Image 1 (cartoon, helix red, strand yellow):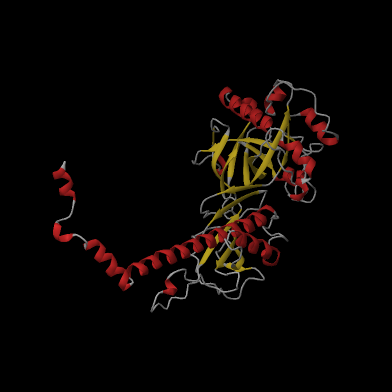
Image 2 (cartoon, one colour; image 1 turned 90 degrees about the vertical axis):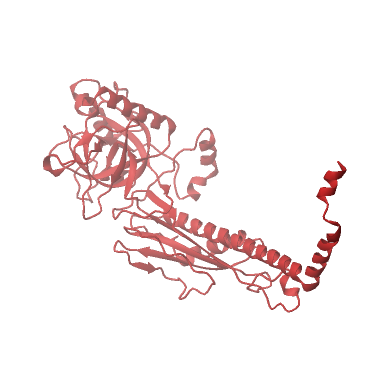
Length: 442
């Protein structure tokens, strides 16, 4: 044991070397300089993280407001530099430890050709000490907000002061100004995974009263009645759900198109997955939906290339497809949660008694509240009967009651939704139907 201990000790001639070395380093200021460097770099790093968090939070908040209040042209009275100035400053300040920071921001509109135009009120020049990375290569029209933050102290000085290094002899370091950038983009989804139930643009305009009437979906469990009683729906710009006029009929009796638009096709249609080959009339043939009655990677018409999806009659489909779609339909009705559905404006058929093709122009979040079907038989098969008929709900009246008494009906309402996407790079040129893609691009 004595030999082991002796082996761990330095040779007799090296006693006191470490002490002498530390004393020499202290005397020349090397250790103090290293400590100052570590402490001050740590302070700059902490400041940079706070500024980045503020820029990210402020840019996301502005994008949420802009995307959530957009009209069919992606514009909104709430989405201006002047209207969002306080939001940006508050979110940047609240994420700073000292509750203050310098901020500049701008909202841009990007055309389908890629031309970026700043909104009124944007800074004439960026003066904060940070640059943003170049936006990703993106197709389709969209909008984005860019927020830049920088150091601002409570005493109005613009730099992070030295905590240790400035006190060293011969040091000229007086602090540094830090900055950060956050950017979020939003636009209409160009390609989406959807429920295989298409709804006509006619009915979308009728139910939403021309983009002016969206409803918020119910919350899980017992939270929805509580939310309704607090008036939060009105604060969100949405009303609580109502069902007294919303019915989507199908078949040759559909007459729900508003007189102000030119489309003549109305109602709903069950849609299949295009398989990518050429078929009659140059349209895509139909494959069965997925095991959840869904369609994947469905594009919307972009103004240059039409997007057609073939339909099928549920009552005439295979037992597997019919059961799959009925089960998914029942699950959606029971949950009350929105699902993305394709919106179509044209139909490649003279009548919709038989399967035909539909031009997809966009995607909308729809809340299914129920359905009504015909008594089984030939009429039920031709109109996609889902189950034996029950009585028509009392909230259906007038023309819609007549229609639902003669054919199948779907009940529900449209809402708004934001679909998050990491680094979105493709947006649609089609109109906005309540579904918006939002994601960070810088």
